[in-house]
Image (cartoon, rainbow, N blue to C red; front, side, top):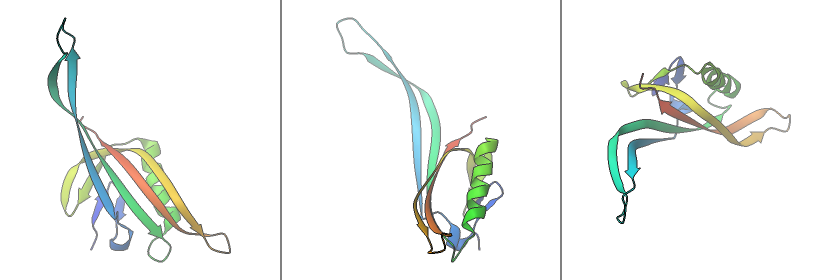
Length: 124
């Protein structure tokens, strides 16, 4: 059973994010007042973002293919539906992809990598 999808990218049970964090921004503006503290005015909701952390390993997924799919989605800049647990969470655009903790075999093939994908909601 799949955890969910991000566009055409399917999150398989062993190749799913181990951490998903949410962030919601709110828009405010400040008005300066003479001899008083500034007045803060609430304008409305801002953008929502998500961050997903993956630990990819060759034992359970194709690292190169997964990285290529994410890179293609980021380069296209398209808004893609994020579905987790059968529930659509919204349409998101990849804001950044960070890779760290590369582990290579003695033959210099990639064995594992830690990936963090930051998404920003597309409200269009």
